[in-house]
Amino acid sequence: ADKATLKNMGESVFLVQCAQCHGVSGDGINGVAQNLTKWGSEAGIEDAIINGSEGMEYPLGMMSKAADLGIDNNTAKAIAAYVAKEVSAIKSTKNENLVSQGREAFGVCASCHGEDGKGMDGSAPDLTKYGSSEFVKEVLNRGKAGSIGVMPSFTDGRLSEVQKQAVGEFISSLAE
Ligand code: HEC
Ligand code: HEC
Image 1 (cartoon, helix red, strand yellow):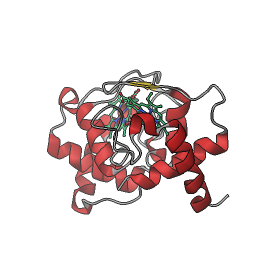
Image 2: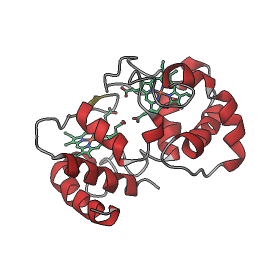
Image 3: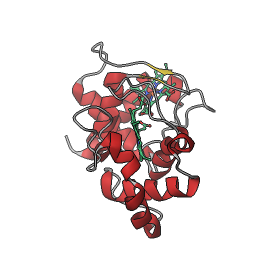
Image 4: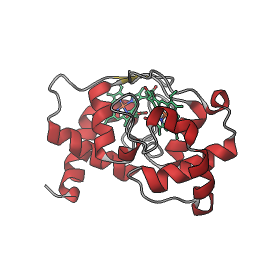
C-alpha cells in the first residue's frame, strides 16, 4: 500500500483505538495524553530535551531533563534543530542557522543515543526514526508510563503490523 492509502487506513485505526485519549484531532485533550500535533516534530524534540522522557523501559532508563544535563534552553533549541535536520526522519528544520551550534552540542546526547543517533543497539531510542511511522510502531509495542500518564502497549494482537504502520503514517502527518 502507498503512503496515502496507509494514512487513510491509519486515520480509521486512530479514531477507534487512540482518539478516546488523544482526541479526534490528536491534540491530547488538554493534557490527558501526548499532543500528537507537536510530538514527532522539531518542537517535540525540543520538548523532550527540556522536559526529559521516561516510561518506555529502554535499558538506559530515563532521559534526564536539560537542566540536569547542564543544557540551557537556547542550546536545547539548537540541538533540536540539528537532530530534526540531520539525524531524525524529519529531515528539515525551522532554525537552519542553529544547526552547526546544535551539532557541536550533540555530544551530551551521543553518550546515550550514540554519535549516529541510532541508540546504541537498543539501549536508547533510535533518533534516526523519530518523526516516522517506525518510531510510532516502537512506541505502540512498548507503551509508555511517563509524566503525562499511561499509554498502553498494543502487543495483544488488537492491531496488525500493517495497522501499526498505518496509524504511524497518520500520526507522522499530524506533526507540523
Ligand atoms: C542518560 C541517557 C540519555 C541522554 C544523555 C539523552 N537521552 Fe534522549 N533518551 C534516552 C532514553 C532512555 C529515552 C527513552 C525515554 C523513555 O522511556 O521515554 C530517550 C528519549 C529521547 C527522545 C524521544 C522522546 C519521545 O518523546 O519519545 C528524543 C527525541 C531524545 N531522547 C533526544 C535526545 C537528545 C537530543 C539528547 C541530548 C540533548 C538526549 N536525548 C540525551 C536517553 C538519553
Ligand atoms: C488509554 C489512553 C491512551 C490510548 C488508548 C492511546 N494513548 Fe498514546 N499516549 C497516552 C498517554 C497518556 C501518553 C503520554 C505518555 C507520557 O509520556 O506520559 C501517550 C503517548 C503517545 C505517543 C508519544 C510517545 C512518546 O514517545 O512520547 C504516541 C506516538 C502515542 N501515544 C500514540 C498512540 C496511538 C497511535 C494510539 C492508538 C493506536 C494511542 N496512542 C492510544 C494515552 C493513550
